[in-house]
Length: 512
Image: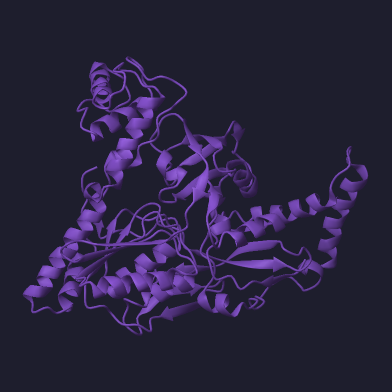
């Protein structure tokens, strides 16, 4: 089977799709030119599917035996597709995958518009379906699905050991339908359930605001084909409004096309400085350098565990080559590059294949390690609290993860100052009654659907209030200090750069 390189210039973000289907694509030259990669030394001889006569005979022998002797009739196309998927699975690479025509069309359709799903980016590793990030304001985020959570089952169907596409098909569904997920979380003793209502996912990607004292904030929720235009326009508007410093927020940004990231990075990195390196299988490196210029104001980048792939490229590039300050949490750690190839023999189908590593400007490979912040700041516990179960009532003397979530919520809302270990004691009961009374709900001291809904609504309101965003506020404070230092030094932009160098290597852990 022959494949040709596709001109893929966007990270194809589907809701509830595996990372292998939606990750950083390829280096800019490959993407823009759409070239086939050159044959590598030691590659298999050319021929039908790249197989030698003996290799083709081995596969054909098994195929023939199954078709003639298996006890029930089989679908030849499914056998062939299974062989292809099997080859890719032996790579033990969660980012390489076979897409049949239907799956490939879904990816193509995802370039524009909104989509129905849970809004999570997934991967399969070691036979487990792992959350890479949840899209902001999606059902996955609202339900409290976290990066590195393991989804064990959906609606009673086990996901352990299933391939990427089967997991996706089970999780995906029409708007308004429910997905009951059984989730295993690091540090939590027992798996717990989350019930999500599938919805349309808004792919609007750029959001901005300006503080009264001139600190601009640009949030990039994901990188797309249109990111540069939207980001550039937002930046121009902030600068025209008298912006003195900038926060770029790529938290929970799952990535996107490398050209988009390079274009945005060039707005801040001086000409000739490196943005990213791409290393091929022989160890050869291609360095992309900036053609732009440094901004005269300080920049900070917000990152967290859900910042992956292209988001990590931008954070590392601005940190190492533009003196930007990174604030938040260590990122996800995806350091590989994928290209999509379209099948000649199976029109419409594609292979997404890892073809290289990407490295930071200094040559660091962040795969499985992530990009570390200069100032480490954890969000409050309630930012990551799981939704409450609607299938059982929480009451006095119960012990469960749901009770722990309840206690964290009540504490965040100012009703509970006691234990948060998951045991429903008298203090928890009184705190719950106080909340119910304040919200004009029956003060039973027990949970019901109305109480759970109202609790989660109030917590979401707190999370959505910038005043409660520790990471954002710490970044703004750091930039204010740099602006003040720059002003005291006569307004030179170098003050910010000097402050950045002093900060490098330091980490400030702030309260959970």
